[in-house]
Length: 444
Image (cartoon, rainbow, N blue to C red; front, side, top):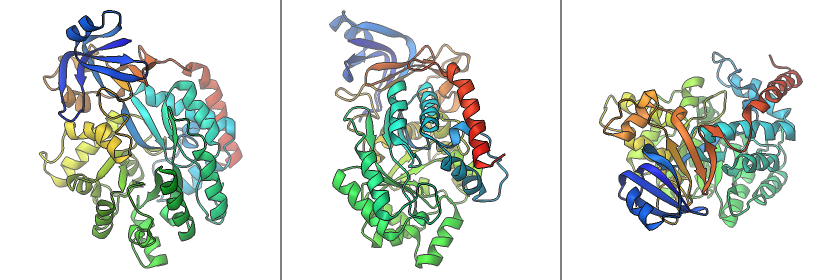
């Protein structure tokens, strides 16, 4: 048994904050939450980690992360390209050249950075050619992962195929589930890159396997306009009429939902994953159509994502949560409408609810998985310490103050260092792999 000491931000149903508290870990689960002195007296044999000055939170949840492709050319795609070029003239050609080795290396680096910044649960966004290699990366660093595979039936896209071929690939990815840290979803690329036949088949597969179905939808106005020209309907309206929208659907983005689409999300119990840094970097208009706040205010299912390393670039949940809070305040010109505590909800328990994993993670409660993040509040950005640790965490800190991270009770980050992999040893390999990818893709 282990005792993790600090001020405990539980995110439980009462949103308890326990000063000089502790979390008792027994194997992979949380066995106790309370005051340190009481738990120490009850469990004198337990090893103790941390101090009263630390801040202990549930592991952060990243609902939309591309684990391959962008990482090996991180922050290399220019940020002044016309709409669509960053994806179809850079990212997709790079993905088309990815080998299994590239996928594993890329995922290893992204998941290592994720853990280092306190993200313990990562949901891959559906652009992996070799999901078994991404699973190997997750196992190597000790991350909790939901993985997917390429799913589209466009004519010329890499890894595209017929609906039957794509669904077979999805079934292969689902077979990677291990009942522990590795889960899998049905993952389609996007609403304008899939036939009705593929969407219906994917939705039926997800329902039959009791897993999620995720796809990109309406990150920009051009996507919505093109879809309306083809079908005569807004994307989510059309997909709903096909009978494929339900609680199993987790929509990536949904920036430009209209009122009818928002109502469908709410009525069907679907979830939406917001990736605000991507929208700002790519100039997709989220500050002018912030439907994510409307969804939140209506009690809908909403989570946060960091997206790709040429969109959100930095894989940091706290940074993402702070941006979401700032957008909520600024777009409404109402500083009372959303704050730091709301942002932390999205990054933990509310995000876990939206993604259907709140029975395991998202809060510090007895019986849940021991996924914990420990922030070091002796660092200069925490001095002096605020009376409101959540306010200071969201607005005054970020992933750099993470010192220790536990996933299913196993310490995966210790003293700010990822335990399972020597990241420095991968630097030269990653540099060479990125250069080779760009050369093979004829980019840069």
